[in-house]
Length: 384
View (spheres, one colour):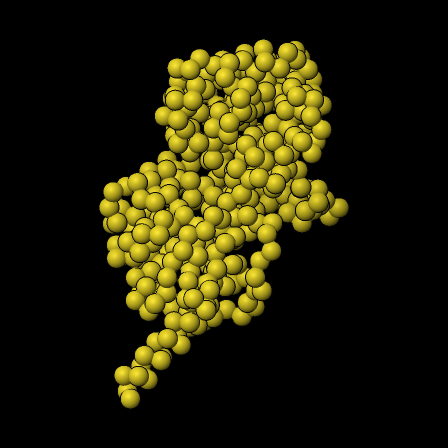
């Protein structure tokens, strides 16, 4: 029976702690959550795995079951290679089962995962699959014990399915606690914690950024290169901000140059050069960025949103794509410039209000100032 307002009032405990205020207590809790319903409703397929489930949220869906066979094969290979009995891994995971369970939002309301033993088995088999799959592309020589024609863990088969599987592994609801992989590696290799973090950081696309919360968290850290020092931040929002497209910037003499990471985003006033990292535009770009946006919304950071806002300014029409493609900043796998514009429109929908402290916002303001001076200069020359 639903609680009445009277019941709710009578059960109020003034000594209870608001979990949203107790930041320290929440540090290791609910790091993996479901995408909010209102966000998911706008594009449901962007948040659903197509080939592989990781963790409890999507486990057991019929179209994902074929990969369970490959997960089992990966566990057999892993155990044979490590020569450590499976009980050692299960026992170690059981020691932290409370932390692992608390990593997932709403897990206590899911009947299938109330048994700790079943939950730990899920952590083991999904953790091993992640470790094995990521090891192939990251050059782990141990994975040569798979057949060369293996469709998942053999190099050639792996390359064929890599993009599709990675798309699933970077979904917000399809994550596994970092602690699981850390335990698997420390037990199997006997490595100290620092070495474990180094290996996992490399495997999870964020060199020297570990430990993290899960693969999506590590991927975003590597993407944004967040540990690097940032430039001096602007404190006042520029209300006269102009939406400067790439073609317009190019017309006023601004050049584009590709850099390796998001941390390299900057505007060089002396050379009138905007430096940007490359972005691959293909069929996986929209769901990947939507999941990154949803995750960043939960963490409270805005660096990625700021970059997306920059893309929204730079790419307003097909004319803006060519100058960015020519410098390798946009890698277009969709064929047409118009298709790139449509992708950018999708990933920039419902973006958060610009945070003027973020690097991309600072760069936009610098270019806006430069554009204003150059445009004003041209107007003066025209009137002379």
